[in-house]
Amino acid sequence: MSEPLPFGTITILGPGLLGGSLAMAVRAAMPAAAIRLWARREATLQQALDMGIADAACTDPTEAVRGADLVVLATPIGAFRDLAEQIAPSLAPGAIVTDVGSVKNYVHRTTGAWLHEQGHTFIGSHPMAGSEKQGLEAAYPELFRGASIVLTNDHAAPEHTVDRLRQFWELLGGRCYLMESKHHDRTVARISHMPHVLAALCAYSATRGDVRMHDLQSLAATGFRDTTRVCSGSPSMWTDILWENDCAIREILHTCLDDLTELIRLLEIQDKETLHTWLEQARDNRETIIGGQ
Image 1 (cartoon, helix red, strand yellow):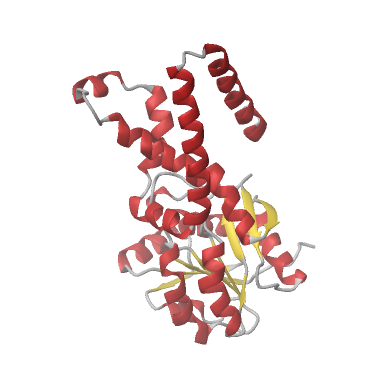
Image 2 (cartoon, rainbow, N blue to C red):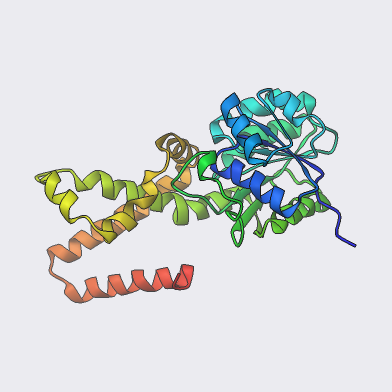
């Protein structure tokens, strides 16, 4: 006898890359679950219906969440609070609201705290998965398979409620970790947000000073492409991420600035041995963090 589904009706607000991939993954892993989608554009909803990844779709968020036992905020983070205020009166008793945003403390302080005050349950989710590509066109059902999923329960939802959400993500192939939101934000600032900033800095600084654009275009190869790939992502989305996780990002960028200053000093004093040690340590750090991937 098969295990009962953790949720029978799932509403996804915002079927972009993450929201669309989530709908596809739910359809594949939990075919008996009802999937509802909300988006501002009729064309996006029609596309989702044509793809067969939703049972219902509408432009009214209050209608989309009615009767759902899981509601997933998959819009840009800046829209969460406004959406929460719209949908709160229509949330079913016992419904869980979660999200897929990459900043958690800001979301808990604004959206999560407000929903908690209204008597609703909010547990944050951050799937460590994505792409520099955007929109429903870039979505695919295997996005979450093997991905780390961070759950943040700052408002102390009961353990059995957290377990339902954990089971949901595990059915999609994710590996769940429970973290406090501030700890999450400091961690992802180092392994997600700071790398994006440095990739953007690399692309930004490459054209500054006395350079010939034609030469850059002719000679740029895998090193430049691989290092800067992630900064092809949405500037609007990343502006929000950097703004909403500014404390943690400023902290690690100040550390980067200190390290960069030291690197410049080593070059200025011609300390080749220490420079070599510095590069060895960087290589070893990478191996330790991602295991040679």
